[in-house]
Image 1 (tube, rainbow, N blue to C red):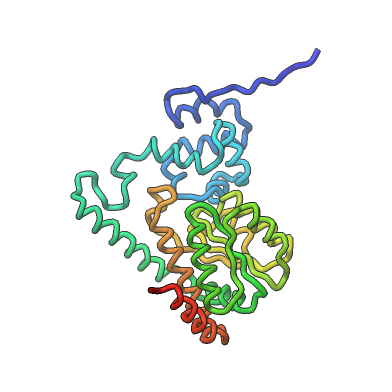
Image 2 (image 1 turned 60 degrees about the vertical axis):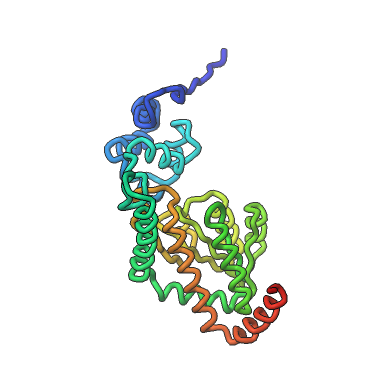
Length: 292
């Protein structure tokens, strides 16, 4: 006679994510229960931390945090963040920082723009320029630089690859994550893989970075959290987040910071690359052909 293990299904509960966590915790492993207790005690803290940082706070691996999320019927850690943000934050807290629901359209516009400017000023004080210079030096010397990113980070990678190309270096971004993964696996020791990721825990980006490391390529990253699965893979890491990452998921001001970091990287590459003047001149000549 065979026995069948039946896993309880809590996904039908109507009380929200916090009730789901309470109901499901008794069926979890001891390590997952520790994560459950931590999340229930400080749900707002989940919104401010990466999966790696929560693992360190609880004393478990990031994989255990992900398994905890999957035990709840969620797809992963980011869905947990989204569900908690919808449940534990008030409407005002979900708005951009300092914006109130009663503000006029003009006030909201001005506050959002000021918030972006403040995020950039804060980043200018905290971003490690020495690490960024080391990345720039490797971009200049690399046989080619592969920029990997998906989702809202992908346009930043595409723009950076194009601009680096105009500076006379071999740089590319491929829009298909699978092609990024394959291309990363075909890199070599003289190549550089540069990842851009807000959370540092996107599955496709991590897969490409692991492939690049296995190929003995050099690795670097631009991200918002100092400790994440991505920062454990990259040799050189530039952290540029902003205060809004504590309140909003995948917020735009972090993208403004990352875009400016990549702009600074471009400036450093131009300063270090002896072929820049000729490349930029030739680029200008080509662009003229596309202007009326």
